[in-house]
Length: 568
Image 1: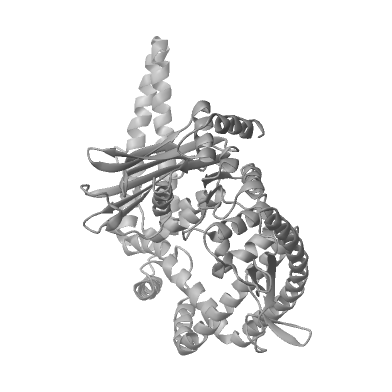
Image 2 (image 1 turned 180 degrees about the vertical axis):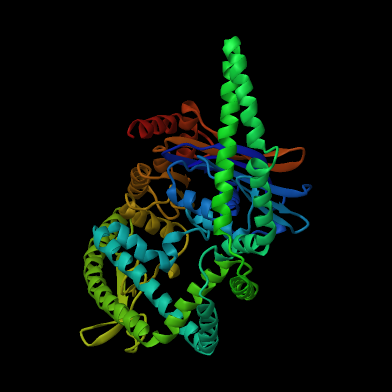
């Protein structure tokens, strides 16, 4: 929902800020006052092209800023997060057009390119009138609209799920075929490398263990000498450590017999003797395991050399060597099994194509049913809106293709193209006059007629259409009396599902407003300036009376205005 719009130095507008609300927002004003300028400025926010002509004379740049409440708009949330923009309940779009020709765009105060701004705008607003932001005119959106209108989401989701699996398998096959030529060239290299690594057959962390063992074996003579010397000092020397400590313990025992306070010290000395005994036993055990074996030592050195050579060639560490081995082993196995692997994937693709064909055919049937219901709804609404002879149709066509194409499926001895949403290409066509052939929506008349057609379509699709804001410009061209009231009623009904902003000059429509705004033009310091204000209840009556009677508001016009407002 659009909550506020700020326009500065844009065409006739010097500085305007207007707040909008939920429901039906009506804008009125004299011809040339600047109503459509307001909509044009909003179009800039949504990514429409702009020139420096829009910059107000005397200003350096035009600024348009819009604030939207997007707290429930999941599509906007996903789009912003996907493109690394911050998301919050409030979305701020700002556009700056400089006389220098520079054009700056901001999304939540973060610079953005114009194409991204347009993507954001496409999820927020539809403008119906002399503007580009009309999603319903774009054929590529028609299939989504028809599907949202129809009641077959389960079937559609089933198709999409299988189609995504199909795409994954097609991509897997493509990657496999691209790899095939490369891997065939590398097959011999991989065989050599696997053989080289296999002959050494390294084990995890083997190099670290070997280096530790080699350090011991290469210093075996010195280690044996040190252990012998330590053992000698502990037990065999004339004044051995254990002998002297034993003598000390005997003296402490004698002291203890005289004074019990030495008991703790005696125990500590006895513990020290026990620790020395443990050290001695460890030395004896350690010495018995040390072998002075030159041949074994040389074998270990050669083994470590082989491991270091592999590390140098294949990654710098033994873990990297083992990882590389596993990787090229898989690549080598793939190279050896291309034929069977491709056959397996191709069979999977064919099975999915058959399944997609069946699901797509059922989708086509459901779309035909939905299209008939949509036709009846829209034609009935158009008749209420004064377009009595309208013919609306949804063309659902399948694209035949040659057999053997990857994105195709066979049905009833014919091959059809597979698309993201099924087998169908969908486009809306319409004729508004007797005897005329139906034409694509993009080619239908402009102005009020196209706006009423859009209104009829939006009314039929209201509950399913996900765009939060719809803007109708010039919707009442060529409309009056009973039809005007019908147009207003449709707008009012549509405002239950969307925020509506509509420009009108008809009192029958204006009287239905939830919020009424008036655009006025004034001369300030010799220059024309357009402004907009929200009308209170009294001002609403005066404005509707003015629309009824012209510049001079009569008493009867005031009475009629009150009656129109009370009839809501």
